[in-house]
Length: 332
Image (cartoon, rainbow, N blue to C red; front, side, top):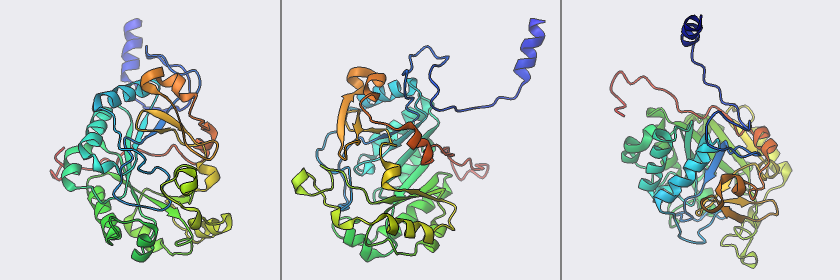
């Protein structure tokens, strides 16, 4: 009888089910009793080649962890239930081999479901995609306007040079050809809230178009009096202006809006020292490092709102598109 039951179970189809925020696991590794860090956003460094006025993670230092320390922290996060790692910055592609090796490690050794990256597109190369692209599920490219003058006015450029828009389309095309999902991130400000972006977004064909209301954080983008390197106060829009932008573009199914309220406390943010960043009081306070206290204790410093994370559609189809490689076009 035991043999028959075993044969029957073996014949059943294999179904992969991801259940977020369920504590406890069959794995031997301990899990946090509270939040499961299903989706984590890691800022490995703060250096950037752009100077966006609204940036809220500015170049306040040039630190980056030794890669083995970063890997160990990610191992602890995977053991605690991390399924998706997103890397942002700073401009992460200023350290291309570091992020490439992190993605390789996460996919090949930690076997996490999804790796994604947020970047400005300026430093992506086809060589990097050919080397590490098999480990990347989602390429999120920041593009706030399809008017070159608007981008220059807001600092979305390198040394005041135009060309950002063409670069966004080029990188998106490279990714589509490799089966990597494309996401577009747009910050809505006084300069672009009444811009028509419908045709351009359709051409880019992203899986998600994240539209953010310009957000202020003390110590990052509220002027010198708070120790900020940027000042976005002049870029702020009203809730009515933000809603008008959303209403105009509502025909686009890929549109995912994030107001200041939706963003607040709905992200697990890790700084360059593997400390969770708490933004509950309108600034960013680093907690204790995972490398020092472990994931469970570090999460207590995060100020993370699980419900808000779910409500803003933080869980989505985040695995890359599987392409037919029978023609040899992708030799990974």
